[in-house]
Amino acid sequence: MSLLGPVEVRALAEKLNLRPTKKLGQNFVIDGGTVRRIVRVAGVTQQDVAIEIGPGLGSLTLALLPEVGRVVAVEIDPVLAEQLPLTVAEHAPELASRLSVVHADALRVTAGDLGAEPTVLVANLPYNVSVPVVLHLLEALPSLRRGLVMVQSEVADRLAAGPGSKVYGVPSAKAAWYADVRRAGPVGRNVFWPAPNVDSGLVSLVRRDPPATTASREEVFAAVDAAFAQRRKTLRAALASWAGTAAAAEEALVKAGVDPSARGEQLGVAEFARIAEQRPASAPRIAAGRPGATRPS
Ligand code: SAM
Image (cartoon, rainbow, N blue to C red; front, side, top):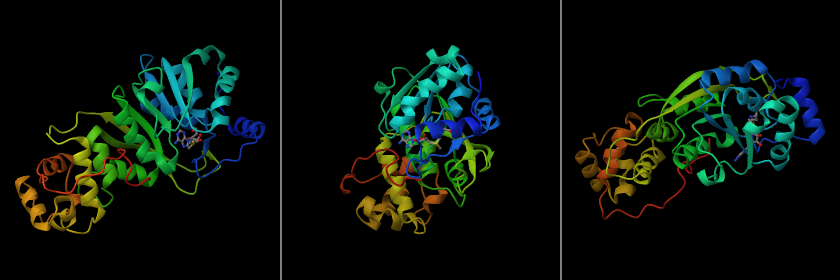
């Protein structure tokens, strides 16, 4: 088995006449050390079924295949999706039967599309949709127990931030609904082709039960969205339209045991769940949406 280095990545790109696009976040890893590190930090075993989002030219896929029972790779680019089995057949023929490729948009993929129940997410994510992809997969794939993803460094900080941190926000609170999220190391720019103009970081996710609450996930996320839509305002003001009026927001906050003069950035997801439970029945209806639909990061 051989991994892809700069020479192999360039040759494949040339063969496919590939022009990496920003729109699809196409930055391919050209460094064997980096993909080996991702797989090591992911702590996968032969019992795992890994889902890889955006396998691209296969750099990470080739490092993952020997270490897990199966890889389900979801790729949106039809040319890359078609090429991947050929690349694996060439570089790791003995492992080719472990791979299935699904040509789909990771933001819409469902458990039924995969033909397997993934236990672990291992991916170098497309950076423009990394947060919605992570949230969508945690919601859509209950079999997923943990994950190790590479994202833009700033997004890694936001995903892993806790209440009180300057970068704590919607991605942090929503990710915490599903998982214990931690930064798992920095990654430089030169391991990619083309090199992105931002640094990257690894993020580890370990599934945990959501807070015990009578509110639904959608109701809790609506409270989070409302609180952070105007993050500099007090919760009493920020939640006014969510509750109907500022007075109704204040009443809901007090019932939830939350100081109405606090700000959203001070609250953990369990507190948002308590607030959601107290939303008055008379408040305007909340439109349903995808779990990560608020803001692509
Ligand atoms: N894993 C490869 C690597 O490490 O070299 C490529 C990673 S590259 C940062 C992101 C990949 O995600 C690209 O192959 C791109 O085509 C794919 N992609 C972008 N948006 C996607 C989406 N919504 N669903 C599935 N794949 C997507």
